[in-house]
Amino acid sequence: MKTRQLGKTGPQVSTLGLGCMGMSDMYGPSDRSESIATIHAALDAGVTLLDTGDFYGMGHNEMLIGEALSGGLRDKVQLSVKFGAQRGPDGGWLGYDARPSAVKTALAYTLKRLGVDYIDIYRPSRLDPNVPIEDTIGAIGDMVTAGYVRHIGLSEMGAETIRRAAAVHPIVDLQIEYSLISRSLEDKILPVTRELGIGITAYGVLSRGLISGHWQKTRDTQGRDFRAMSPRFQKGNLEQNLALVDALRAIAEARGVSVAQIAIAWVAQQGDDIVPLVGARRRDRLSESLGALDLVLTGEDLAAIEQAVPKDAAAGSRYAEAQMAHLDSEH
Image (cartoon, rainbow, N blue to C red; front, side, top):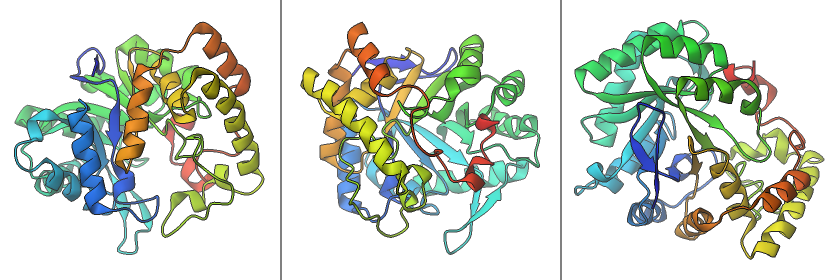
């Protein structure tokens, strides 16, 4: 497993990270034992970056990861944790809280659920519109000084907010959606992160399964599956988006690889400062994703991919309108 440094001040991490959200939340039912086996398989393959959020399954995801890392595995990984999203007992979204006192309380609970002494990268999940980013970052900085946090990251922040945050404390990475069909960061955000020496951890590289090559338009979403309400999975949009996948499939077949591997490799090759996160919930999907690391896309490949899936070709926004309003990165 090769490594990349997260920003100019961050740790060396595996070139591919594992996003653990789907093991607890948002994509319907998951299997606990398979989830833990998938985390262990990732570690065995050299994956060191595990990403979670304290609101994934209302703490369930952190406890799951804590269980998977019990027995001396903590030192093999870097834990990236998001905080700030508020949820009710029914799982509903209530807003964000990134006040300094909330930062420290959330961190205390996270440390307990994970069963660890420190978090490698701690980040607000979204910009709290009621709290200056300087106050939030300053509070995390206090936790760095106290030894409970090693590095500070951001998530879905816009260019101006990134600059303000970086003026308070070194920022190692911005976590943001980045895929063949979600490229809005390229215009304003990526130039700023590169200017400031801030890395990118890219989530949604397969667009929640949409461009994995495995999604069928007849597939039903089950339970509390985010995709049941996601604009890109709605009738009309879905057919147009799967047509893009079909175009991508022709390129993948010509290279003897899967659609998912093409999509992941494309993100990884957009720069050495970018670390893709894959949301594999099963060992077979993880194995497929890891195969992308062996794929080097040629200039000819990249041109063909660009033609098959032009920028802004996706039908529908990446979140519903109400959720898009919370994305500082989109304003």
